[in-house]
Length: 112
Image 1 (spheres, one colour):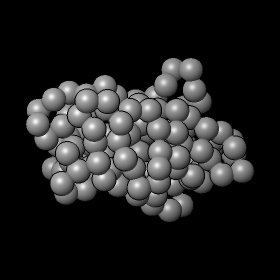
Image 2 (cartoon, rainbow, N blue to C red):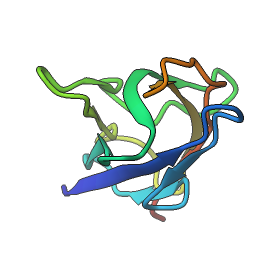
Image 3 (cartoon, rainbow, N blue to C red):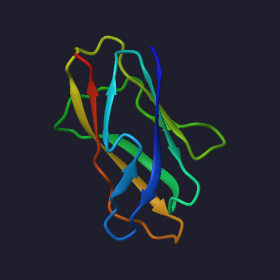
């Protein structure tokens, strides 16, 4: 079990597209912890939600949630998830300008 940090380095307040350190494709192993961190000067003030795509496999158990007292979020990959599973999920966020852009849909892949 490892920590898989994802840093949000830029957020486009018009399109909602986020630039992520892993280019939006995170490779994980069962039981890994995924942490979403917001970089300074990224244009992203806060993550408001990280949710499952209902048409995709639910990789997280428990689901991602805010880390108390910070702008970071953390989720744990289900330890009994089948290898090779993948999930499209949604990150909703607020721009530092106060705008609420469209949500962004990256992907998480459980290593085979």
